[in-house]
Length: 148
Image (cartoon, rainbow, N blue to C red; front, top):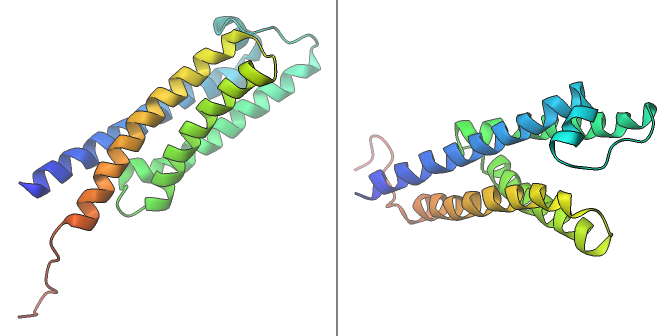
């Protein structure tokens, strides 16, 4: 019974990481290819000059790179614990970052939507990651092959 519960938490965590990757890709690819469209789709302020869109494109490229780092955690979170932990911490951290921008740095409230998405996915990932770690550390030890 323990292994079935553990297997369920692992699969659910993998699905949550995959969802985060898909959300990041949905933000990164349009930010790189069409930053003006992405800003208008999110109801964010437009870029004021032609060359200023390089920052949005760069942010999209960084988000793409970060998403690629999450892939090992989506494939095997027990083996790639560091990637899994970074995925959870980064997701929650970026959610707080967006909240901080709106609350303390006087950015438009439209940025809160990004924060809500990141914090929601991050909270689910954190709960499932803790369940996965509990399963890993609480499962009974298995003897080595050939040992009596």
